[in-house]
Length: 414
Image (cartoon, rainbow, N blue to C red; front, side, top):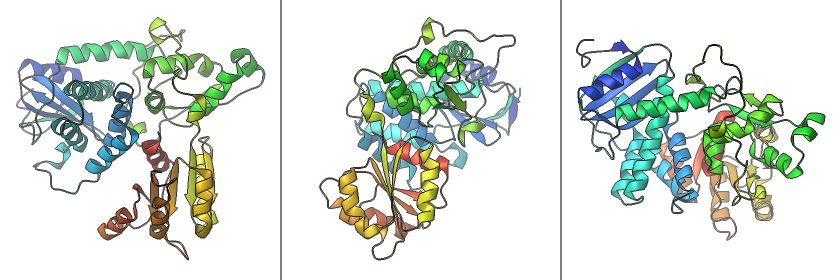
């Protein structure tokens, strides 16, 4: 295949991974497919991390959420602070090639270096994120352009993973994913609950199960839902297959940008089958997670009825409880009564602007810890500094979309 240090070459991903591993190479291997770039870190032929450039901090947040099931210290506040700290970082990164920058890996290295996580938990986090990234890489049906770059950058490897064992694990998981065909083609597809009279009463005789389905299927992807519920995603999807087959649960395409990822490879001639024991239906909510905790209240303060109507339209279909407040002077009193999970504030409002209102909310005992997101068309350093000083948690840029709204809301869900 020639010297892969010089320019791009085209190769099958699995073949190239095996070749780099057998040659005991050290460096970073990149693959490109359209807008997606994968980066695999090699150290003496072993893989120390793998990722791609689609929403790296959204994916890190999902895996930290999964880790929180067994590590109570990984709280919502911790997850949000880690992602914000490195996603918004402005310090220069020592890299010759910008495409090699992996901010989320810097975040993981920081958690290890500052003893925010135990070494075993760091290894588990790296393993799971690496497996997920390589799994999607291997779902590409055609050879891809690739390039190997010497050097690992400023951050050392945190663990060493066997190439052959990772490929075997991905192959095993692929067989499990393919058992979900034809109902599921991507872990980022989004299930919605649609009750339908007779079918509903036959399949869901227990009212509690109907309520659970309606509360958890809010427009998030299978992968995000499994992370929220602390469940294995394959088992979680397997538990939904009977309801998908009967069209009680409808499945929509992945949101941007996850629609760019390759779908689960098809197996020719494979008929739909019942979920096997490995994918047996788990309870849709774990015993320790009460149903009522799955209803999230979002409050949006904006003097524009048109903006509030747009926000409700975008979020209403996701089954959130949406409350629009058009009078900023009355917002404090209404929010104290409402006790929302997330507050979104428009920056530019008459009589009292978003910064001033945010300071008032932070001075109220019942609202001082509620996530507050500033909705603004201004994203300069001075604007962000002013917002931080007022006590806001994050920013949502205008114009916003359903995808950007869901991403922000998911970040701050408990």
